[in-house]
Length: 439
Ligand SMILES: [Zn+2]
Image (cartoon, rainbow, N blue to C red):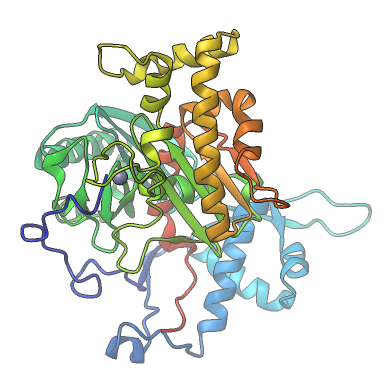
């Protein structure tokens, strides 16, 4: 995965601020009375899309976003508790909650009275509202899942990933049509599609820049094409970015605001950076967090990016496998990596030695990332996380800056789940977004 691989003469990058694919601040929300359109674009913003000024309704919109997110994280929750947690007057909470209930985003349920007190009404997200489709493109198989506002998956299907992107869009549309036949009411209400891609994506335009495993997709305007053919608003992003977005929603990281997710893959390393609870996508949204291509050895082997000694050459599963079987005449087969992990857990010295060496290189890169960003935690995902018990000490201690404790943990769900959850999160972003302010 590399930006250098992009032929800039043949790949046209859409100006993210122009045309129908820029992030829209207008929000379509389902309501009991059909559809309610909320236009959050200020007059000044319409004049200059880079300037996001506050309007008289901004405070309410910010509070609405905070309350909806609090309901998501603490449901079921009462109005009184929302007021306690936020410090917002109870009457103002009720106004906003009434709006959310009116838009079918939140449902009310009677709670249980404590002592002689009145019975509280508890609020939860309406899992049947804001229906979205999550699409996780993998080199061999694509996963498609439907979910509602809670992010809970209601249906999941897979299809073989075509080599040609237009064929991919055709297959996806067929899947949407099948979903529509099986759930007529729900499918017709699909509000958003979120797509995760194993390569570089210009996220603001949803355009694939480079997928090493699917070279024909390079330059393809994936989100725009799906949106045009399906009529459903679509966004696409890099899969490691989506893994980071997914971790934002995992319960135990709910209070984290700055962290890095590292995906140690078969042959490469992906990463996503969350800063102040927002995904950092780089200034033009085409790439960021390409830690796998940090040079750690000037005289190292040549990398797919055209440079030498990149970190991913030392920590990918292939690198570990080649340490385990250095003289193997056959190409690395990712499906056999689990064998190495099993052998290591059984005490096989060759497997333990290979993992131990990889752990040292992991320590080098993770320490560099830690010093550059000072995140609250670095979360490691990928097959190697299954051997964390064997390598943790080496990773944490080998190259840690003296006196500093590098906080590292592994991702909870498996990678497939992480990518899919991230795509759901991407598709739900407009429902939970707060208005942009600043310039
Ligand atoms: Zn490289």
